[in-house]
Amino acid sequence: MSRDVLSDFERGDESCIMRFEDGASFRVSYLVIRSNCQCAKCKPRQQNEQRKIELEEEIARLMLEKPRVSPVGRYGIQLEWPTGCSSGIHSFSHLREICEEHGQNLE
Image: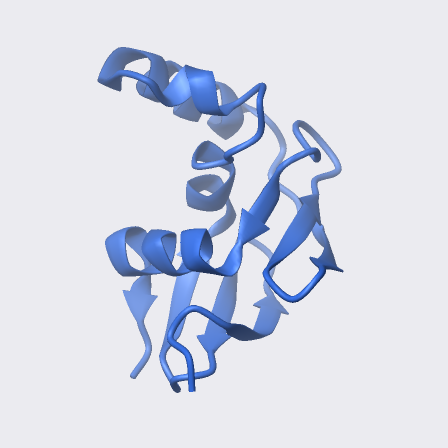
């Protein structure tokens, strides 16, 4: 069982629950996931604390809606947001890092 393999992604209205193969489960807000997007447009906006705060404020002003989720190979997912960026691919290991740093552990 791998700690970096996402086995389930349960979408709620403002957050999601991610379950991993090792049995760990986390609740994470969509705001956190979006503000940690790794795409070519978003990642440079996370280079320093001030730019990251500006990105988070910009995302917070958007209407936060449930994303559509599509698998990308065996290593990640793509989240398609009704408003904002939809080009980022979120690897399972990146999602696990977000969960451990910002999520609510549900174990």
